[in-house]
Length: 507
Image 1: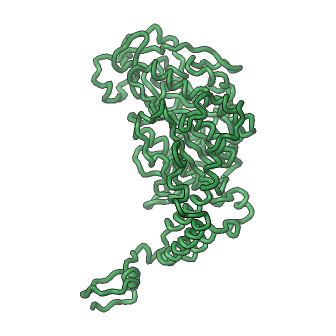
Image 2: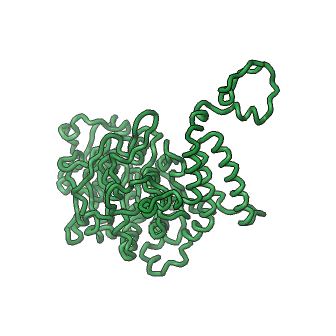
């Protein structure tokens, strides 16, 4: 046997024989990282204990602001928003057919997009081989709505009724030109996968408002009974290099809202509680041995799952909603998994203190047959969007709930594929597109930014997606430059090294 030094207690050494006591073998499996992490187990143990009773370790100020986690000193300033509801239209809805009114384009039907407008900007491989880029004016009528007189498409009769509550930003832009990089970019601040999602950053910075529900919940909406459209990967609501306790919890529309939430046959609630207590002791022992912070996350997630056994079924049971409320959301509200049902759940989550709720609905990727397909999509989302905002307002929640609507990029003025007066398709367009925001200190009745006559380039008040995220953080009382996490030798943040708050939409 090779003679070992005292440090071999922490680092494996070569042996000539294969006999070793199992406990000794486990000890020798400790890594160099574990060795150095042992120097901070005192701090780690305190953190572990704080999971059991956070109030023992929080000063009065921190405890009152962050009752269930979050960073000391946050929010940085007075917050207008306590929570966010993000309605994400995956696939990129056409701003030209819904929001960005361009009546002059009717005179340009089937004429080529001028080279001076495109100005050599790259286009996708789906239209790069076309011989022409013919102009396709919107086939939908626009009319003015509200006291502000905002022009809104006939596709959105319900949304049009609440424009005095909305700030409609027409000059959102991004560098990403394909779906996955674009949605990854707006969700995480980087086109490359691996960064924390927006909701994870909020959970990390501000913690939860309800210890019985996750700080970040994700809902997926069906269209005609299926999801379809562009794939949505769990990393879009993941925690990246943050603790896994900050990742979004995706609720299911059928069966248990969360997999394995119910106790298996033969296991009582008392037995489950005893099992978790014993498991927590084993995890605590392992944490004291190796100091891996993910063990703390595991303990916290087990406890959250236990509390969710009661809180989630109550959350998703809508039988206590009034008939008037259900009718406001439309006929689909009683069908689990629909956009209408998810909007109602989002309001129920807002009442219960869920920090960040994100609703995805796909099938907005309309490269062909756009007039028919966008009619269907707008019928699905228009009334529920209106109902959600009105419901929040009636309950006094809109004043501290920030609601955001939009996708990952916009659509081109030129047609993809065949063009007729009644049918056309549109390709991806990252240079300018539209989102709207309301509630929580947003100035209603606002049209912000201006595009050129072709809705192709920004001519006034550009808003990059980093600016959008900086503004969302601002309304939550967070300075986007100060919410950082050190990883691999550098500080990361949601807005990377960019971002300016869009003051023009704030009340």
